[in-house]
Picture (spheres, one colour):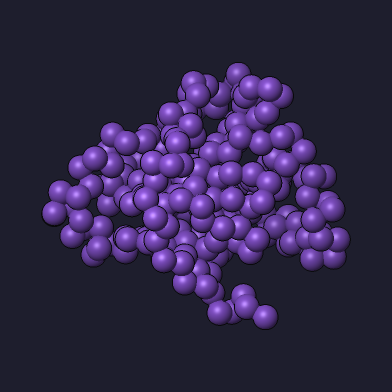
Length: 212
């Protein structure tokens, strides 16, 4: 496994993004096996790494709408399931274009790609009690998957902050707002959120190690 990940890393290093589309979906998912120690975006109860070239368009307590200039990413972080350590057994969806469970030590999740409308594809990746959904052109699927993986595997939770929120009943609504474990083929209500209903974006603190 380490040799495969090393080879993939060398491909990126030597040839850049031109070879991303030559990777299989299984090879891309293997990137969950690499460690991530960088964070540059800080939220209530958690933090994560926002890849260079991406920005936060809208943010509520545990929902983010991200943008890479071409595609919109809908991120939901389920701190309730995290603090309760809810477990989930993924079943392969034979109707999907791509369907795979993800296991990495104590971490788990799944990835699915389904045909959407107007020749678009719905990419869903859940990992570490967070989920990203993107509606994307086929040509951008690999790129979107890599960006989503980079975000999801970087998420770090703050147990004390989340516990305090639970004690203050702040998170009661979160259990019903969005189901990160739902991998049905039905269109997601969350991915159709009207961005005008979102509040102001929370503070982003840049990662000084990434600045030239």
